Length: 297
Image 1: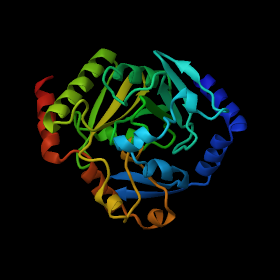
Image 2: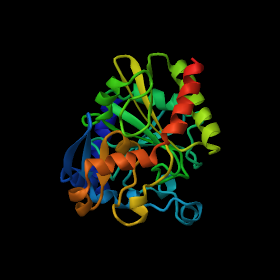
Image 3: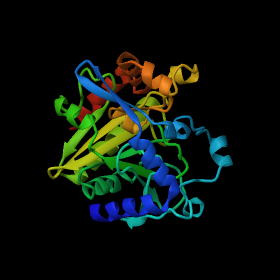
Image 4: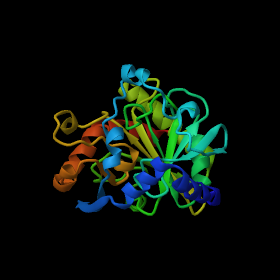
């Protein structure tokens, strides 16, 4: 499938002006590395991510606009190819990383991970060298009304190295709470992740789905899945107008997107660590869920 994706990216970069502009924007993006404790975060200034960072995702706002992931609303130049059980792979015209893809379900319907983890694992297994992410509603999905994943090149993907330090399924002293699952058995991973999501729903009272982001990849015949339980959608600095940032999966994986240059120049590693702690699940609730997961082994 990698060959088909390479051909699609090449063809669309020549035929679709919106994507060509996005690729040029990514090539011009400034990236700054900051070290926080023992791990690195790469701050990336990408002006074309402004609409996603500030997207109004409340039900009223979403209902007022046409769904930009439905096939009937795509640019006439946009094309993709089908994959698996009802998905179509498209090039993302507002890339954060190289080879940024959007993987869209054929039918319009709410963003939800229930019964979709297997599909996510299958996509990752078919995309060597890529990561696959899921942004839940109120967790960075600018289209919470249409089921989709994103994927991109792991050429820059800091969390891949970070999770090597995981103590079991937890990464200590990481400034953000994340569950890490790994292994070669698809059904075992699905069961563990489904159980985690159910425990999070019980602990937070958020239904039909708790606030979560998921990032995973497939390497050396095993999957590595990172599940970020969220405490809130956006940090207070966003609402106070101090920093225009709204972390989603890719940000939590260590590529922190800022659309404004002044924010890119002034944001510090300490501020990013504070934002990570603020938007992921509080320690007390996280440890409670982790203990229940351990006892269910």
